[in-house]
Image (cartoon, rainbow, N blue to C red; front, top):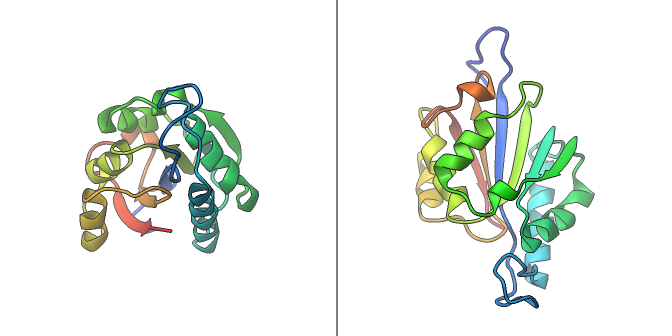
Length: 176
C-alpha cells in the first residue's frame, strides 16, 4: 500500500460473508442455521484465495455469534494463521454504520482484521468505507450485494480510530 502517513501502519480489513446456510434450523431460529455442505466448500475456497493474496495471517479475526458464521470460520481456519480469534455477538444483528464503528475501535497493534458476518452489512460497510482509490468495477459488484462465501478486501492508511466513511480503498472481491 502506498500513501501511509509517517509513523502509522497501513491496515487491511477483510470482510467475509458466511458460506451458504441451510434454510431451516433445528432450534427454529435464524441464529441457529447451520452451514450447508456447499457453504463449507465456499469457505475453504475463500480461505485459499486469502492465502494466495498474502492475507492468510490476520492479527485479529472477529466472528459473528451465529452458528453458520462459526462454521464458516471453522472451514476457513485450517488454511489460515490468525492471531487472536474472537466471537463478536454484535456482528450478528448490526448495521453497516455500527460495523464501521466497531472496526474503528480495533486496537492499534492490529494491522490486519478479518470479520466473518452477514448481508446486507458486509456489502453495506464495504460500500460505505470505499473512497478514493477504490476499484470502481469492484465497488459496483459489491453494491449489488455480496454472495455467500464472498470476501471483500479494503485497505486504509493510518490508525483504525481514524476510520470513517469513504476513508478506505476497496481493492479486491472474491466470489468462490
